[in-house]
Image (tube, rainbow, N blue to C red; front, side, top):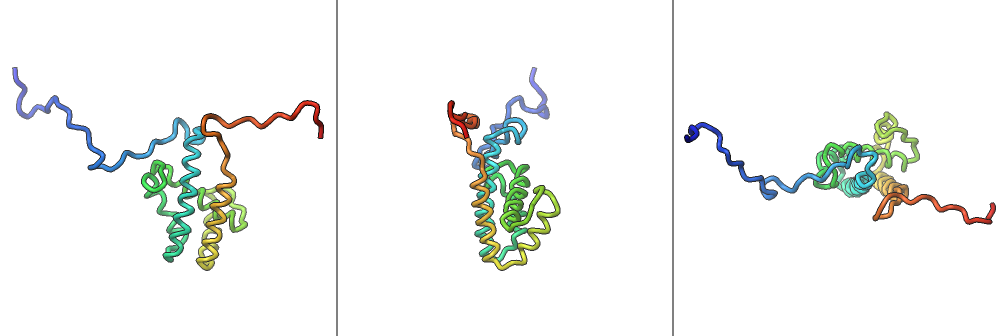
Length: 164
């Protein structure tokens, strides 16, 4: 018995090739993003990359907030994180810049960040670049160190027999 011509084929279409659809998106976190140390490191790296991009973009007379705002649209290709996490990278970069300006940033999603960025945008480009560089240095220094092979090491124990 043959199937009618209008009946869908039993064959599956070939899988799409990467040449047609581009590279696969970067992997997301393993579970909740905040508890995945490898993913948090990727977010941190993405923040440093974004700060570098922002510093370079300021040379082209693009406003600071516009440079930060576009990150989520390019998170997969330029920053190596899923696009849904691009907003976290934007928020962290903005908070680092505002803190580099000496303002208490509080929450990365708070009004203080918006007000701080507005003030910073009024500064000359050279000063904005200095703040972005300072933010990148600060972010690199405050990153938690984790050995490549495993979880974070426990702090060293005091030597026996030694006192303060």
